[in-house]
Length: 494
Image (cartoon, rainbow, N blue to C red):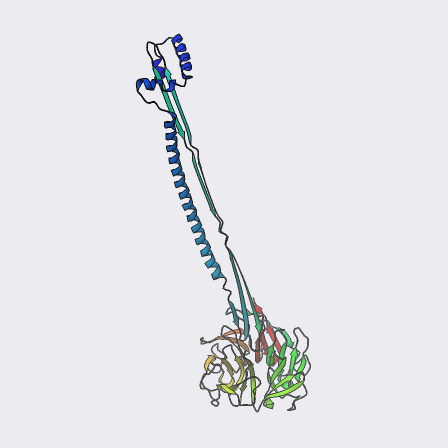
């Protein structure tokens, strides 16, 4: 700018001459300081320009350090968050490693297996880039143009450029996965019942799975059948009373085979006299029979016999999950328990035992019995038209079905026979005198008809003096239809 002011008022020739002289003068090294010496003025030099550059560089360095510190701090914060996420995930995984197994054994064995897996992946990426570019330019021009005297022009220019680039990238990925598998299996064991829902219903038209060919002694016939047992293979064992034998019907068989008795009525070891009940000891594949009129409980194993209990008016049999054997005595009006293998004693009274009567501590002609997983004993109290429940160690029982005398109403029973209880505590009773099967809830005043709503008859939806009851492992209901000499299967409605 100053240079332009000095040239104002000059003609083109003067301007050209001045420029030429200036170029020649600048080529002399000593011209840089000449004017300063003559005028006693200190001009800007290269060392002073370098000081400015150093100062700017120091500032840039401080800025770079600060940016680096901040970047490291940010990086640590993300790392900390990442650690927190991992710790939380680990806690969740630890909690999910619990694998509960529920094993319920009584009449029903239920297993539940639960498997849970949680996978979490966290990826953290942090990148910080900082670039600083300092640029410094310094130019000094000294111009002397003598006209009438001496004139010097000095032009100084300093340029500094700094570029700083900071880039930070952080990525966190979390992917949880959970897988759960549950398997439930139900099996029968002695007095075992299927896990039956309160809403379960059965087809009213039954399928005849054994007998159904009238009264007789043939292998496809019955005469006075009473007790029944269903094993895991759905084989059916029936105490064929008036034929003085126990018959096994394989699943889907057209006739049975004699596995105990069958040698006429009598008291020899190979004979039976009005057997009323049978259970299968699946530990050794033997059968235990209530040989009612011979007043004994006898075991049959491969056509060999062993008397377990003598001098007992045995009618009903049951075995709990611990292997204890329970027997009802319809003369002593009690139920007693024996430990398996220890029968040389009178047994322990677990229900009744206080003479014949209708009080809560009495029974009157007990017949069929059932034992649940808590070793509570359910007894069909025939002449009292009720079902009693005796808890383990109790001094008296509780009425759980009936309780309102003999009759046909829903709050009454008529000579109850077979009794079984599911794991929900629902009580199924063969209401013998009313030709129907009832379901009772322990705290309810009345029951409901499960099958046999059409009174006595021979049709597939009718029963005649039903006795024994059993479930298979699918929840199908089996009924000993004594008066029709057949075994009826009522299929569950899924």
